[in-house]
Length: 301
Image (cartoon, rainbow, N blue to C red; front, side, top):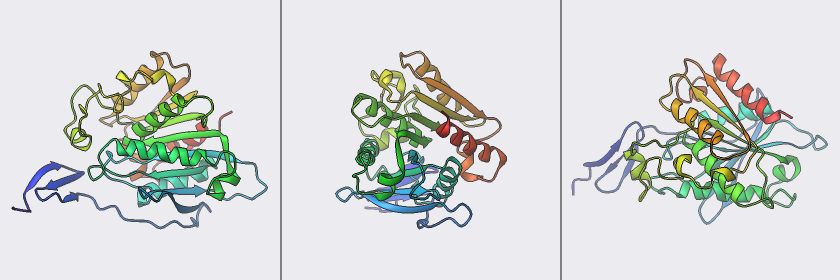
């Protein structure tokens, strides 16, 4: 066997060799949790499931024990379901800024990545993480930050790109779980990925058995019979003017408005910007404005 032969190649994400090895084009470095010297935001890593090695990173702004409880944001990172992590430099920097600006606790889920862990594992991990978080709503969960400081009346699900797709899916599942389950107040989708009518070859590789197109209800709300059960009352969708996924975010808003869901949806465009620009150029004026808009949405009455 020629172990150097490539059988599948999906730049700029990964390629697969004949012997089964998977090589990613971009190495994502680990950034340890710490106290951010500029904002005072503290982060730590937690294990959600020993069985699956599901982890998360929690970010908390400076807070005193006597302070009122603060909003909780559950975040799912982007990366086409196959790269990225809450522990990489881009995510860590963004989530530190978000926790500081919104004065909110942020829990970012390190769901398992495809193709080593094929879809729908990422969706199931993300739902399991929300269940773990929900266990803190009575103040009896395993993490003291969530028990003591998270306001479970103000829970938001958020994600960018593929993570926005996951956040939407988890919000629908939360709605289906019924009124006795954790109540999600709002959904935040930044430059969301949803499939269209052209089958996506890489998604089909990552998700065996899926069409990789918009007739898969996990990949697109278009054919989701449970869309009207979306478990929140407010949605905000951010798109970027030069992003090839812009039309998917705009289309998502239109579908929500016309499918019986009774909440409110807002669309915000960053003109002249590209996909996930706020991660790659976080100090830019429009990236700062995007974080401020997120904070305003989280803290509105």
